[in-house]
Amino acid sequence: MRRICLVVHRFGKEIVGGSEQLARCYAHLLKDDCAVHVVTTCAADYLTWKNEFPEGVSQEDGIYVHRFAVDFERTLYWHQLHYSLLLRHIAPGAPEQWPTLWFEDSKKDAFRRAVANLPRAVQEEFVRCQGPYSSSLLRFLENEKDNFDVYVFFTYLYPTTYYGSQVVPRGKRILVPTLHDEPHARLPLFREMVEDFDKLIFLTPGERSIAERIWQPSVPGELVGLPVELTSQNGGIAESIPECPYLLYCGRIESAKGASALFQQFIRYKAEHSSELKLVLTGHAAERIPDHPDILFLGYVDESRKFSLMRGAKVFVHPSALESFSIVLLEAFLSGTPALVNANSVVLAEHCRAANAGLEYRNYDEFAECLSQLLSNSEIRKALGDNGRRYAQQNYSSEVITTKLKALLEHRDWECRSQAANV
Image 1 (spheres, one colour):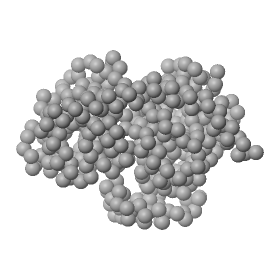
Image 2 (spheres, one colour):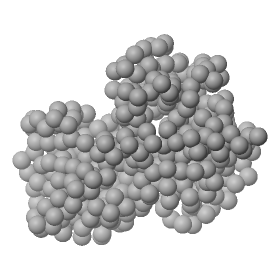
Image 3 (cartoon, one colour):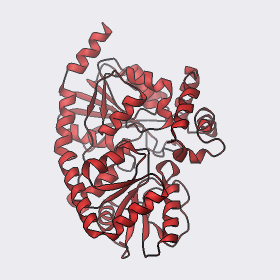
Image 4 (cartoon, rainbow, N blue to C red):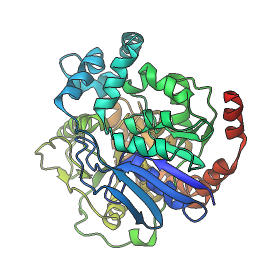
C-alpha cells in the first residue's frame, strides 16, 4: 500500500478554508487505497497561528494526523513587513484597499518591478514570519523523508510548503498551489520554489492559466479539481430562512474577499432601487459589517442551513477576485441558484461562462445592471440555475475527481522524469 503524506498549514473538521478543505477532501478520497498521513500544525486561526490543537499523532476517520506546535504567533513585525515589501507598492497609505487597486495593470507592472530584485533573505524572512512556522514539523519531514512514497503540499504561500518541500527528496514532491492572482505569488522565491516540484495539481483551467502567466512553470501540471456534492445530510429544512427576497454570500467576510466593496455596492443599490431585498451573510467576519437594516449576518451555519439558504436565495453573490476554485460557488450551482461574481476573478468568471450559470461585474454600474436583470426575470434565474446544477454534477462529482487524483498518483512518468533530472 502506498504511503501518502499530505502537508498543510491547518487541518480539521473545524477549519474553514479552501486549501484546508481540499486537503481534508483528498485525504478522505485516498484513505481506502493508501496509508494517508497528514502533517500539519497545532494552529486553528489563520490570522494569529496560535497553538490550539494538542501536539501529537491522532487517527481521525482512518487518517493519521501529525500535529506540531508553531514556534511563534504572527506579530506586528510581519504586518509591517507585509506593508513595506508588498502593499505600499499597491495601496500606499491605505493597505486595506489593495484588493480593489490590484487589478489595475499599472499596479501589477509597478509591483513586479519593485520586488524583482528583493534579496532572497528578505523574502524568506517574510515567508517565515508570515507563518505558520514549525521547526518540529520540518524536523519530522526531514527524519521521515524516505518513509513516504509521495508528499503532497497544499497551497504555495506558507512556510509549511516553502521550507517543508526543501527537505523532501525529488521524485516525491507534488504541489497543489491553490493559486489566485495576488501580489504574494509574484515574489521571485515562489517561482523558484515551484520549479523544484515534480508535479502541480490545479483545480480549474483558470488557476492553471494564472500559474502560466505568473510563474511560467516548466513543471508538468494536471487538472484534478475538487468534488462538490449535496449529501443527504445537507437536505434538511433550515431554520429562520428569510421570507423576503435576498442575495446570499457565504465565506470569509474581509476586504481581501471583496466584502467591503460588496457592502458599498449593495447599500448604494438599495438606495437607488426601493425593494425588500436583503443581503444575507454567513461565515467568519474578519472585519466590521455595516449596521444596515437590509444586511443580515448569520455567522457560522451548519451544512443543512447553508444549503437551504442557497436554495432559497434569488442570487448567490461572490465579490472576491482572489479565488482558485470556490467551493461555495459550486455548491450554489448544485443548489440551482444563479450567481453574480466579480469579473476580476478569472476562476469565478470561468465557472460562470463554462456553466452558463451566472453574470459578471467589474464595477457598480455592472453590478446594478446584472442584479436588476436577475431579480426581474424568474425564467432567466431558473435557466441559469439548471445550467449550474448540470455543470457541477458533470464536472465535480466525487467519482470524477477521485478517478483523476488516483490516476495521477499511480502514474510513474512524473517521478521518472524528476529522478532522471537528478542523475
